[in-house]
Image (cartoon, rainbow, N blue to C red; front, side, top):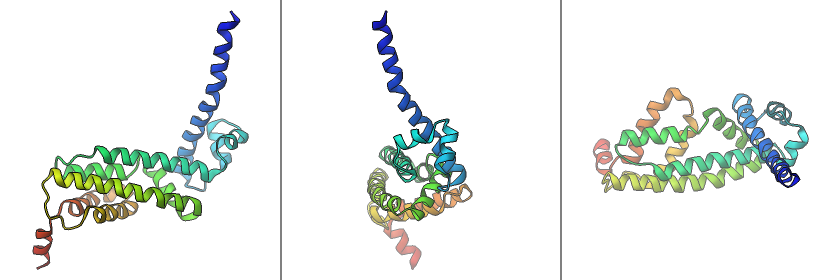
Length: 199
């Protein structure tokens, strides 16, 4: 009988740190989304129902916790970019706007705020930003190819940079429609139409 009980107890002991980490991450998402990067470790621990020692066992500091969340958000974006299709310019722009708004727009605002405050997070943000841009540029190129855009007004990399720059400033859902229209122009406008418009 003890042979059956021992693995069960060991399994529970191993899951407990994982469960606590999951609760900490969920609490951090909520606290950062509601309060911004100013949310304290104590608030996060209280929300998660764990002690402060548990937090420091999982993460060296609040910056490391935010970095983990930023990496999760980055992975969400690049996975989404890899599956973007161009059935129409409007559909592509709408889906891209949804992805760039983040899995949680309030949390995304806190991440941008954190990068403005914390030097280590700023450096990390710049690193992931480059990969994000590269993956988005690949998605733009793929969408252009699918729509048979031969002479785009902007190269894919420039269109990706401009789109990312606009997305940081358009997290507010009230300007989503304007953002989607701008993305459609950045991604799908052909050089000939831009030349005609300028004339």
